[in-house]
Length: 136
Image 1: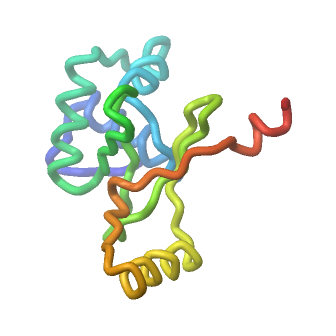
Image 2: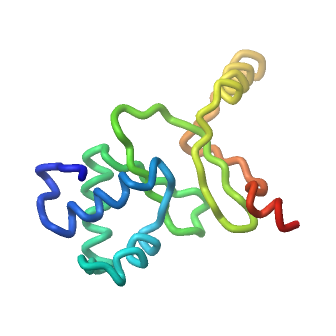
Image 3: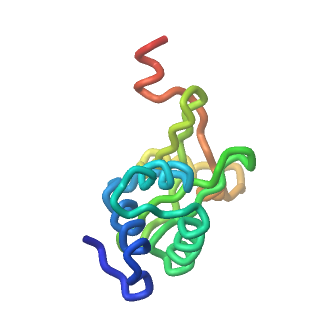
């Protein structure tokens, strides 16, 4: 179980543990609420948002707002994290981080040859994930 002295309530610990169990995958507050809905530790939406705000401020969680339309996504961060580009599936909405040297080289190319610095936190590549492509 992940422990943090700032989140020593049963619900806060449960949220932090759940986020860390996702292995770096993104999730929304609604998905967190759905997970806890039938659990031994029911957690209300207000409590989830309050803890997500605290976790984001402490650096344990990264908050991503992709398109201004979809719900914010949250991802557990275990230690220092570099800024990364995001991939978003047009079909199912799945979001994942793209930590890849090739994209880093693209970022350097754009800066060197086009004199433009890309902001990885605000950069999202849209397409189809493996699961959605398999049903096309």
